[in-house]
Amino acid sequence: MNAILNSNMRKNAQRIKPLQSQDTPTGKRDDEWTLRLIRVAEHRDRKAFAEIFQHFGPLIKGFARFENVDSDSVQLSDELVQEVMIKVWNKADSFNPNKSAATTWIYTMARNTKIDMLRRVNRQATQSLDNEDYWHPVDEETPISELVRQRTKQTIHEGLSQLPPEQGDVLRKIYLEGKSQSEVAEDMDLPLGTVKSRVRRALDKLQLMVNK
Amino acid sequence: MNSSVSFHPQDDMLLDFSSGRLDDAPAMCISAHLHFCERCRSRVNQLTELGSEVFSKGAPVTLEHDALDKLFARIDSSQEYEVGDTHTASASTAAKHGIYPHVVEKLLSNEDHKPRWRNVSSSLKVARLFTGQNKFEVALHRIKAGGVTPIHNHGGKEYTVVLSGSFSDENGVYNEGDFILKEAGDIHHPVGAKYKDCVCLTALEAPIELPGILGWLMKPILRIHPA
Ligand SMILES: [Zn+2]
Image 1 (cartoon, rainbow over the protein chains, first blue to last red):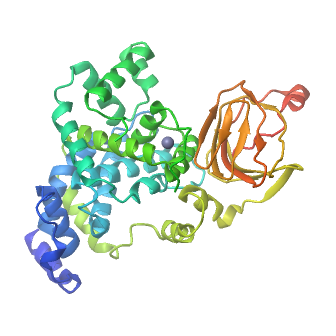
Image 2 (cartoon, rainbow over the protein chains, first blue to last red; image 1 turned 135 degrees about the vertical axis):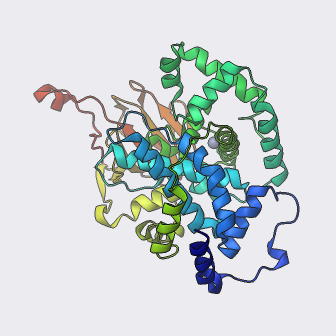
Image 3 (cartoon, rainbow over the protein chains, first blue to last red; image 1 turned 90 degrees about the vertical axis):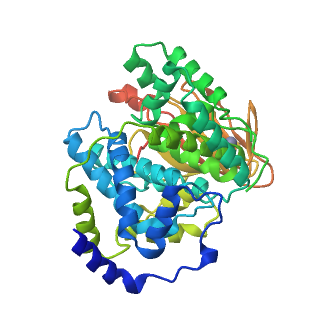
């Protein structure tokens, strides 16, 4: 493995552009994954990429639960991990640390790829759009207020684990299992109104869906 | 972009959009609305941060033991940067300089299914867009300045986003970027603004087909052709 790694690093050596100190972000979002992702972008750094893979691969596989599909869902989950991570490798240089944290960037890639995969599995018709296209106006967004985004992230980070378990459960079903609120209601054997009010209360506590 | 958007999708729809659970056609309308609406873009961004946090605290599942080796093998055997498939890239470049939201431009630039305008009445033209799903008919509607469209009543939901110009109905005046949802059974009677044509993106839910001659007679004025 190491030998392969080294020979590939040599192969990639010509592509590496010199690191200029002004290229690296200053301080504020140098969380560990962001730094590794930048190393992948700038140096095609396989060690940093392997670390990203070891951390996010299993999370993506957990996120890749395919229900109600005809194909083998375990195989699909493994395929999703591969597809997402190869995109992380290929698109690393489009990652902008001033616009999002590495985790959010990888998550959106996983979400988009998962939805595209579901479309592929569930239908024969040619799709005119990729999920990325739907997100174009959001992705193009220049950060109006970096500070607001940071604060939002902080509030969510601190608040999520403090939510009453029944509210956290609902959010996990929505974001990890990709269920609509009515599907969550059916799944948990609850009235739709109850699910909606749990979501609403969770969002209120996390100070989300408000005008910022 | 304009900040005078005054009709927004409900939070529930934004939530389903952000988790990827919304049907394709309504999601196209949300995406078109986001092009114009900073308020909703901000909300969707907040929800993406939430999704990301839930994701990062999810339960990890063990990978195949050789998953990383497989991945490096794939990386080595593919040309670098090949994976982002090329048809997508060229289509989005083509769409880049359009005046409409990205999703609309991309649907309009579909070479295999070129949209064509056809007249519905003297003041209304429709161009169907090929979207590859069959729950909704997605189309552009152009209402002539001052034009009156037929009163219509639909069998399913109807989503509308104003792309340019404005129109009004019994409930208000809708301008660029406004998002309007009519439920099945709602009747409305859109009227174009006086001096400028109005172009809208619409997604009309396909009603349940009625059998035989009765079904044919009962089809609404704007016939549904999901594509
Ligand atoms: Zn809005």
